[in-house]
Image 1 (cartoon, rainbow over the protein chains, first blue to last red):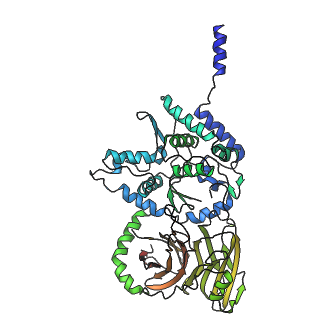
Image 2 (image 1 turned 90 degrees about the vertical axis):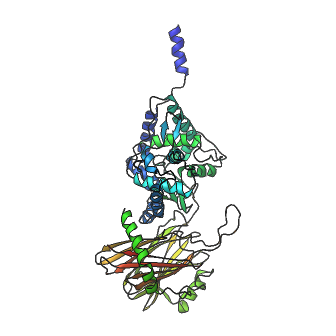
Image 3 (image 1 turned 45 degrees about the vertical axis):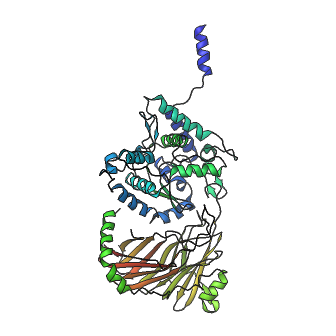
Length: 271
Length: 153
Length: 103
């Protein structure tokens, strides 16, 4: 009798798929929709599936407008802090963008690369940079450039249930409908990936986190992933969220894990 | 990426800047740029200022490479090349831009008649490549769709 | 830092030249997001390209050229050691000049 009650109880509890199962079923879904694409192809975002957009993008990538940012980022990276130390003390290899976002057990939160850059500054008695500041973006551009062709290494450590919880929160956010248009991220980028909305092709989610920071032609300047998240939220008439807020970091964590293994291409040009 | 080469070039630029500036004889007055060519107006009004009697011949010897749909009207990559003889200049005009003339490249005989640039387009319009030669003016055109996208535009 | 970046490549007896310039190329119809004031025009008007001090290309343009302008040319002939000079002048009277050695 007790065994039956227990069995019924277990059946009633929602059983979440593991992150690895989520990743696998999402990739199966995309494989069915885009059979011509390998995992690495997704690094090009919408350009992997829209030939006309791709031709324009290829022309611009011949001498891309983010190049000055890489140089400026390198100059910043190699300039000593007031206390004589350097960013290299925190990042011996600047090509470390593949490691972020990552779960930090001691802090109990997801750490993104911009946060890690600021943590390095604060540890060396430098004031943290605003996340939209050009120095912050240029540093990211340099580190992303050095990380090119490394693959997204984000994982969900098994030894910390809080990491899994952050992942689940990010996933819930992704699939939650919101805003006046009542879209979830998945509405466009999973269910309707590859279809057109007016003249734009909707890109799949895989490859959304590997190309940052990005020189968006719309912005005419370099910007961050979280800036793009906030913009997307505004475009579906939902409340935007602040850069590096917990929700957006958890969202990035979920998306990055889904894209685990995709080569990094930052900094990049996008429309 | 040759970043170290760029550092070297920067040092070289500093060293040669004074010498080069004097040799280049940059005009202090705007000897070449004319406000009337870049004034707002229609395409026809602009062409009337650029080409005497608007005597322009359509030519299939001009190749205009430009995307059919612009990802973003702010940055549209375009290339023009031509096999016409004795080219003096290549101009790019955008029919529905407030200022139709985007650029004129004046090319010496030591330069191949092929150029690339990135132009702005206010809306869906014809882009015209206008080639000036010793034998007159020639053109070709292509239509580029510029629209606001569903979400990201 | 220079506003002009130059790349060259010797191909089949010709010199391919690619130039990327940092410049707002403001057309004067944008408004400042905070003050709503019109942002004044600010664009490159002239661009000249010389090889070994000989002017080869003169460009006149306005704000119909994209922000952070890019140009590409193909010079006839050319050799390692050629000195390419790029100079621009904008409507504020600002100038910049950069030199590049073909390698």
